[in-house]
Image (cartoon, rainbow, N blue to C red; front, side):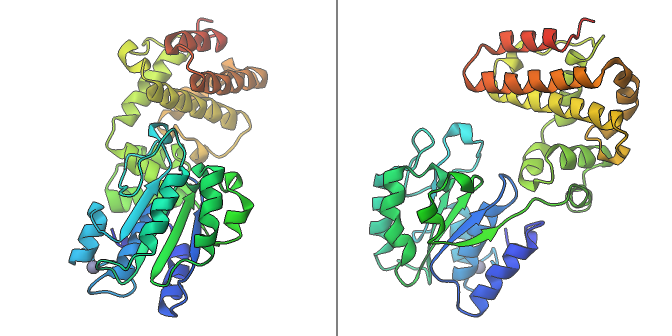
Length: 337
Ligand SMILES: [Zn+2]
C-alpha cells in the first residue's frame, strides 16, 4: 500500500511528506485518532517511503525493501502491538514483542532500546511502530521516555493510539502529534462505490454504520453484513419472524456486532422521529419499514431501548452468558408486544 492508496488521510500524509522533504522528520511521533481510519497504514507506508529504493516521498511497493516491510520481514522495521485478541486487530506484524493481556510491558521496551542502538542491517532509517500505545504499562512508559526524547540518529519512533487520553502526559509531551480524522460519511460512501465497486445499498450502509472509518468498512465489505443485519433486525423487531442463530450468538464478538446493528436501527428510528433528512439513516435501504414501525415507539421507548442496548454491551464485557443477555434484551425491548 502506498500513500496514494490510503483514503481520507491526505492532511497527515501531506504533513509527513513535508517533513521528509525538508529533512525534518526527526524524533518521535504520536499518531492519534479513532480506530480503523488508517493510522497504522500511514505509519507502515512512512517506513516504506523512508527506505524505498526507487522513490523518496512514497512507497513504490515493488522494491525489495518495500516488499519486506509489507510482509513484516524487514529486519529494521519493528512493530509492537499492544492489543490482545480483544483489540479487534486482525493484523499482527510484530517482531519485537508478543502482547500480553492488552499491555506493553517493560521487557518489550528494553528490547526496543537494545535494537534501536544497533546499526541498521540494511535500512536507511530504522522505524519502530508502537501500536495501541495506550497499553504501555507505567514502567514501560517511564522506561521509554528518554528514548522518545532523543531517539538515536537514523531511527524513528511512531506511537499509535485511539485513546490519547489514556497515555501519560510525559509521553505525549515528548512526541510530535499528528491527528487523524475519519472521512465524512458521504465521502466514504462515494469512495466505496468508486474505488471498491460496491453497490449503492452496501456502500451507504457501511459508510454510515462505520461512521466514516474506512478500515472498519473494508473489513466488513466482504462479509455478509447486510444479510446479517437483516437477520438481527428480524429477530428484534415487533412481529419479526427470525430468531438469532444459536451457534452465532454464542460468539461474543458476534453478539457485540449484533448489539451495534440494533443500536443503529434504533438510532434511525430516533432520527425519523425528530425529522432528520432520510439520507442520514444508516439503514436507508430499509427506510419504508422504519417509517412504518416508528409510530410504535415513543421517545421514552427509544431511550429505554438505547439504555438496554448499552447496558447489554457492558454486561457482554463482564462475561455474562450471551444467550441470557439476548433474551433479556428481547424482553426489555418489548418485542413480544
Ligand atoms: Zn520501494
